[in-house]
Image (cartoon, rainbow, N blue to C red; front, side, top):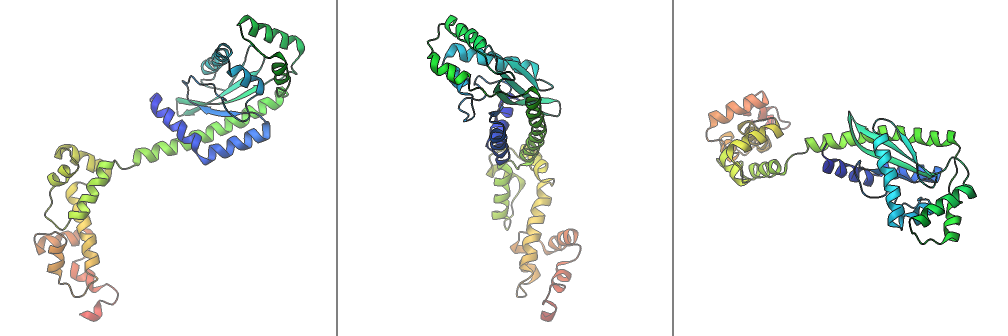
Length: 299
């Protein structure tokens, strides 16, 4: 799947009710953010998420620390191709990516984290601030310390369980993605929709394949191929079916003669109309009309 198609699919899934319900339930239950992102992206996974870790939020304001976070994301990309992977950042926080695959194609990651599996300690915080100072960052240490020590701490067993939940959801998302792709592949091209509208509007006239192709600005050869692919019928068979359906409606009117109906729906001869009608309906127009409820009384 091309990158652009994968990104569009992920945008659709991110906007879907199923993903939003899941994200809300997961974040409310765990206090952790969860993001669904493309494989290649230059944005931080949880940027602007309401469950983003306050320490990570402060880090995202600085381009050097932000680059360190993107490096973690890149490492996750490399390690989580086939199975979930967890990476620790310079500040000792864990992030995890769960691959979402369609068949053998990886097209995105569910990402969570910004938590630690050991209680944050002063030594680690000092090491982290030293790193930030080395990068030349001007940080409000009081604000930073408060945010750092408010990092969510999970037991490794708990964290593993969260990842298992995401793995199950990744499989579910892949199924939903597959349904979207199948629906889109089966969606009718706009050209065919326009052609059908033209046929319906002009079916009473003597219209040809060339007329319809011209109405949608394409060559007769290309239109013929596309029409067959989209409808499963060639143009002549499709036109016949449209005309016969209209004829079946007109046959409900006992005051119309069969010859009138034949010409009204676009047949040039009564014999041809009778032949096509029998072929598609399994009986002649006269027999069909005779078997209509209430019609026998008119004969």
